[in-house]
Image (cartoon, rainbow, N blue to C red; front, side, top):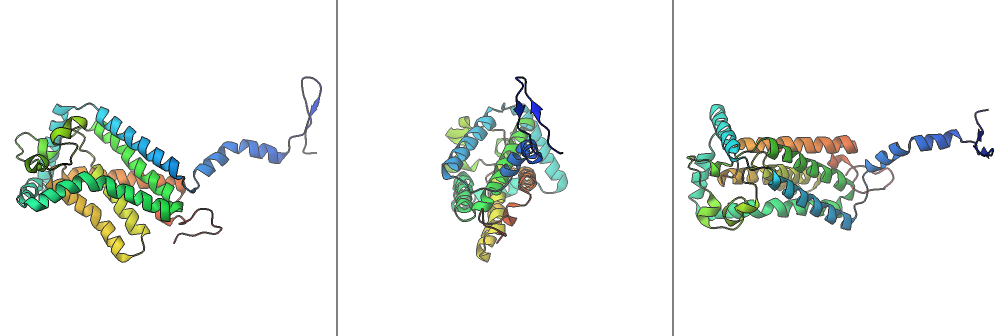
Length: 284
């Protein structure tokens, strides 16, 4: 009872298939998904390759989006008028005020050009080395944040304030002859000029800041983590690279990224065990 012999075409009797074997076979795909959704110890070579390919693909797709200048300028005008209606259109005032302090605006130009990459990579390395159990989930949140931003670049081309005709905004990189922005000066031809919405400077800095604030132990590290996206917001506005509402777009992207990571791994990154494979491990 409970077992069935299967007669094959050449008359031989096949071995009975037990319930356990059938269950294993039926649940094979489910088991694969379950393994993919379980945090694993990251492999260095794979992570370096994945990050390099992902950033290359992101840059390629972002810069391949048609530079719809007319639409981008119309959208910028709409954003500017919307901010006036909301009473938050102070980007012009901040841009001119900070530009009058040369050492400060030059520092912000270099901040805008470098920390965006350096700190993001630094946090990834920190997670990989000291929090491998949380690394995959945090990395997924970052990648999802970046991926969904591409939709914004495609469907909502937006000119930054510094490119608005008659806006009287100062392109601080050009004025102060500082190296840095892929969207200003000689490097402008290498980057899509009208991909300001959403701001990935805000998306990535929020990812860094929240990750540090939620995972790091020292209070000073948590404070610095939270200050990083705030400082970045001031920088992107002062340099006339973004409107306030571009930052809101970046916030929405990071919310999507962390939501996807939580749904896939069943928990936010900081709540996962620090190490992978420890029996009864809990987040610490």
